[in-house]
Image 1 (cartoon, helix red, strand yellow):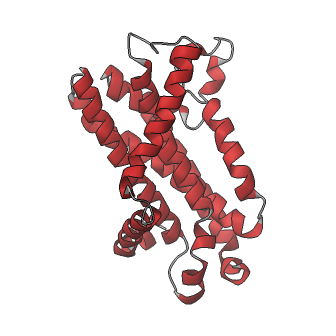
Image 2 (cartoon, one colour):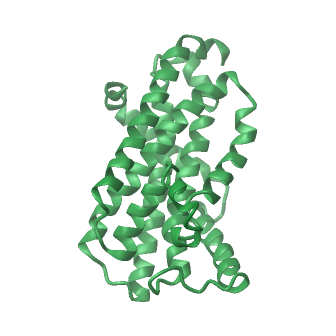
Image 3 (cartoon, helix red, strand yellow):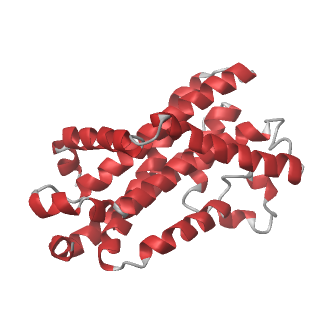
Length: 259
């Protein structure tokens, strides 16, 4: 799989950029919606947690809106990566019928498109955080690694779902609900300290948890995550990509016929 992605890297890049342009082509604000959408979500959740649930700070004096942005923006990009990956083969059906391009290339294109959007959003968040008074640190230089690893997990899950969605058409309608459950069961909108201690160990089994910890350690706490956090981040990527590759290999011969 790695060889195919490297061979078609130019194709993947061009398709990702085209996807970003077409996605907002009909909107007056264009690519600004890539930033406005997560910001609107942040405003809604900040209002609920700050004024309705009376949660002004998350932990260690960090404003809740900043804590929320640092988790919600990566989550939006991750969920987009998974959703677009799940629909990747069906959307690319005209190309798959005519071109001898490896199927995983079209999932990688969707993942790259979501990652570019995440990069734009997080850069803006860093600028806003600096203006608010958060002092930049060299730890921020490691943020791209944590963010890319999270998107790598999204690519692996998207590859698995993209293959299965060709044969099981009930997956796409159920996916938004599954992602919503996954978001609320991981420390995306709230810190792990909000979780009762008897339940807290189970959150470590959630694939997204180590990525949220790594991102917030680097961005908010400006500390290097523990080695086992990095190990979990890399491990989940490897597991998801291996599973996706095995599922694709098992069903590859039938995908283009079904499409």
